[in-house]
Length: 108
Image (cartoon, rainbow, N blue to C red; front, top):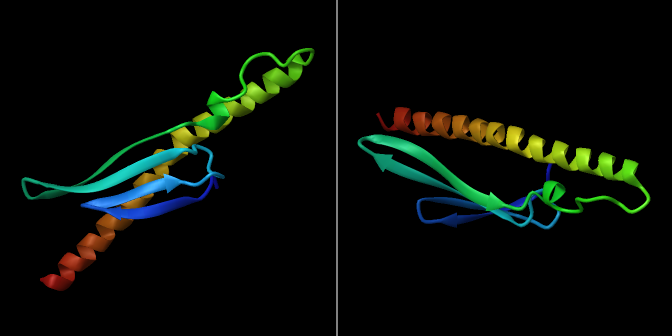
C-alpha cells in the first residue's frame, strides 16, 4: 500500500486526494465520466509530488554508499508508482464497467 486517499464527489466524477502518509502527497487525481457520441468514457487527470523520487537527492557528506542506497530506493518507489498506479486505476475501471453493465441489464 502506498498510502491513504480521501475521495470527494465532484460534478461528473470523483476527486482522489492523497493524505500526508501517501507516497505522492500532496497529490490529486480527478476521475470524470464523459459521455460522447453514445459512449461513456472515464477520464483521469492529476498531479502529485512523488516525494520518494523528488526529495533528498545528492551526496550525503562522508557517506556516499548511503546516498546510492537512498537514491535507488527513491527510484524504486517512483517506478512502482508509475507502474502500479495505472494498473490500480485499470482494475477500478473494470469494476465501473461491470457495475454499469449490471445497471443497464436491470433497466432493460
